[in-house]
Image 1 (spheres, helix red, strand yellow):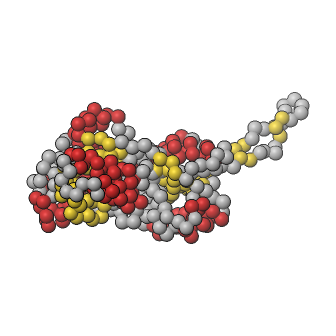
Image 2 (image 1 turned 90 degrees about the horizontal axis):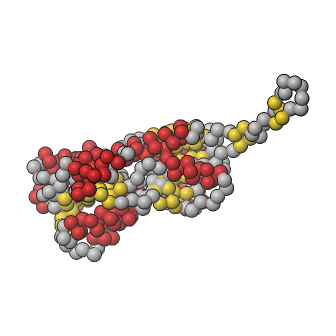
Length: 325
């Protein structure tokens, strides 16, 4: 499931005024500076996909490795729960907040509260639309628009510039859903015979992807030539629906998706998925490297981009063994 990103921020150090006692009664030497343990609040969208779970594990694992106190809140796909979590983090006076926003809008008030409390907010993997960009420190993410472009270019080449396409969108109002659609349609504009016949949200989940695909099959059946899913989990659900309808996904129906999780590689090796565009979720190291840069007083860019690539059936078997998620 770019449009990139990830986490956190500055710690404070505190000088100890205590003196170490000398056994012999000699002059006491000052103790080493005692650094306050960094406390970071992390508000995650949820666990709707393998990609999302991999991102959570990467950030949690890196925090543990570096001795950071990470306060984690799973929003279960609800913006109201994320706002509540951020309000709680602010009340706890965390050193930084990491936010993977459910949707793009509706954040100004709570981000202003964080700014007023001098708590930096780092966005990971999804951006926000706010009245003042200073309400967040930086966004670490993939370029979701470019991911959509990559998928469309590959599909146009695969289908020789002519196809009836059925689109499974991500969560309505989310940055990846908006941007992956935008990039895809941007390229399709160059191919008049590449048409999106129907488009509906599958909410980034495998179950909803299957449900939406079943409805497409029921209404349009054999007219379906290609499926574009905004993430692998929805594509895998669609593949199951196509299989159950005897429509031979990967051969009679071309399927392309985004994220490049291991299950997508398994589907490519099995001949069911044709291609997937990578969106790397292993953001933990980059997140906490960003923290170190902030603590050193560096000025960060508003956007730090993850680099992604496209994989297809032809190289899936050779690459699958190297996938970490």
